[in-house]
Image (cartoon, rainbow over all chains, first blue to last red; front, side, top):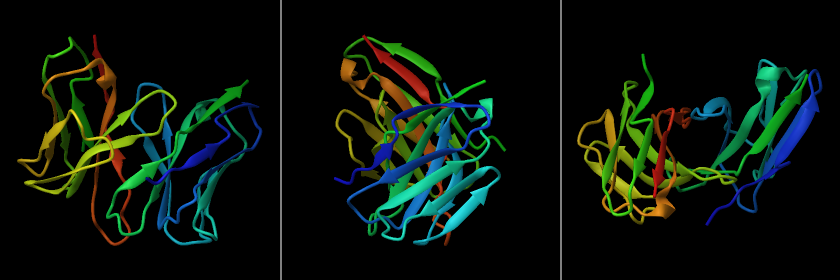
Length: 112
Length: 114
């Protein structure tokens, strides 16, 4: 089946630093979604991407849909303590309806 | 507007017991999904529904059944629970609009099978 890889698996950063994480696959996707999950909560949608090359921002977050359609990137600028959590990417497979494949997540810790 | 709600939030079962997890959404979404989340893994699709009265298998359907009798509700059943079904279960919904493939998630149900 389809698989997504996320890197890094986890990261520790200082408050105020910028963060970059990515999601890759050997398969092509039509849509990329980025979610954040806080402990004990469900994932919350951060950014949705629909076209190859698309660059979209949501406050301090910026995500890009890779040109090859096999990857996506999420950047967080000037991190703050509430950025702590697990970030998931999800890709929609062509001809697979509205079903998405989820990556294993990147766990972000922000040190004061 | 509550979004997606799930009941119960926690449950402990003994092997062989049965239970039903309830998901409700008030966004008039056509599509609903059940996922399970295990440590270190992404969300895996169990079953999904593209409309009232219809259901389909996802990636890991074995040991689960679902029903969508009303558009706003999606039920996940475990007929005979096994320890391998210990997990956190998430329900999600989405609307098949032109740009809206986004899925909105409930808060999860943490299930332990002993």
